[in-house]
Image (cartoon, rainbow, N blue to C red; front, side, top):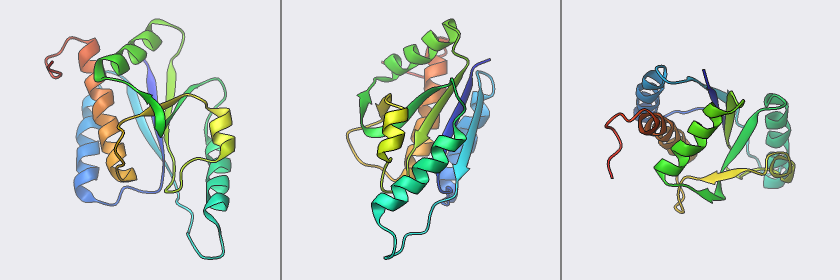
Length: 158
């Protein structure tokens, strides 16, 4: 069974977003092993620059991702996929030896250069900017949508 892990900086605090994530996470149990890893958000202060925060978060992220896994950064400068194209990425992985995907949402200031260098594959969920909490819900829904497309279940309409 394919394993998909979403790695995020900070906690989801809004209850309506948590509820949406729970709904789609529960639905995903039929298709894959889906988990979310929350990395504590670093405290922002006038003594620490945004670049330093990105660097420290990057070090934590790099330590959390196992070797030899397929990693995508969820990044505004990433590749745009339609839902059907994204489902093909997942379907193709299931047809090969790839058994584990990691998708990473960076912190409020983005990713460090070290993270970009380690994981060059990027996906953009939209040209618009969304809160980091909303992206989590949108992403989980898109993973669920991808599996329904792969399984020919009438959830996605064109």
